[in-house]
Amino acid sequence: MSTTGQWDKKGMDIAFEEAELGYKEGGVPIGGCLINNADGAVLGRGHNMRFQKDSATLHGEIATLENCGRLEGKVYKNTTLYTTLSPCDMCTGAILMYGVPRVVIGENINFKSPGEEYLASRNTEVVIVDDERCKTVMKKFIDERPQDWFEDIGE
Image 1 (cartoon, rainbow, N blue to C red):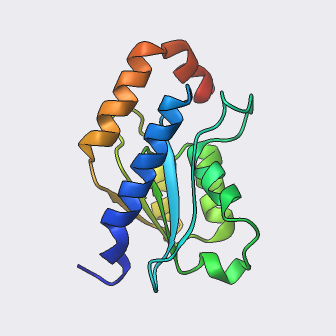
Image 2 (cartoon, rainbow, N blue to C red):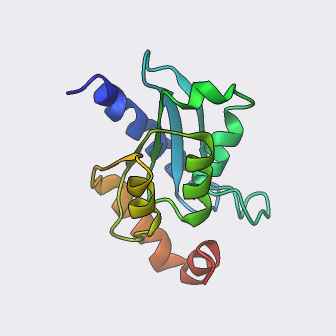
């Protein structure tokens, strides 16, 4: 395993914990985590909070970045963002804005954003891990609350 990928299990486990927490709170089960590639330090973690906070923008990746607090721009340049689901256009933009060089995605079966290809075209490493836990909780949510899912993705 490359040095960059040595924290992948840790990062995906944290992202999934966050997704489960979001689901238990009555929200969309999408979680995230930002890890420093050099030492594995968790800089922030979060989950989709749109329903819990009546927010139009608190997707899992955005909540993760929010929970990192203010970081110097150079810090993001040596991180990996872990997310349980393919990042939407808004979250893709945040990843690019801060220059996060690597994104590890739990699954892209329930939702595949064009953001994946856009990230790759902008030299961001995109890794899909096809995590069964992520697929299962997301499918369960979509089946139980399709109207809320469509609202979350802007449909």
